[in-house]
Image (cartoon, rainbow, N blue to C red; front, side, top):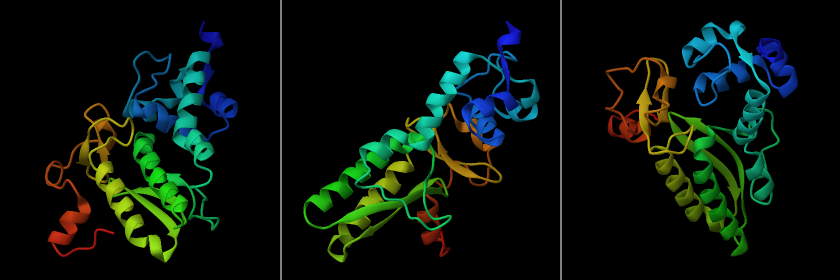
Length: 213
């Protein structure tokens, strides 16, 4: 029954998130609101006041929020991930599709620590469609940590940051993200001058003498 459905402003109170966060999750397209039927992508932003969510929708969104907060990773790797406490410096600010890459990196950091070269993951973010991880480590571990960073970055450029499926760097007119075909809509209209041409911003910048960082 329609009376059993929640409006977005009611859902954010139940979920403990802000409205922009909720709408962003729905716009990804993996969770389709019960009403209006079939509403996805950019239409979610344009028609968010019409959205109605069922109890099942809310449960799915709760699972997705845990995934996007990396809740399981934070518990399993509490010895490795020790967030930078400075305002604006902490957090894992990238899509959940890169969780597998993050776990591989954390396993490498944990192994270094076990071998007497302590290291800790401090934060991570997406930049230019690639995964950037930042750590504190002993000088003796530096070369291996740098290699772990490189492996993670390169893996992220062929892995969808939303779902973890094979992907490539995609350019819209105002953003670039690494996405699979199913999630390519997130960038909006592709930029024909860059999309499919630049597949690694850092490598392209180095080749052309520009600063990719």
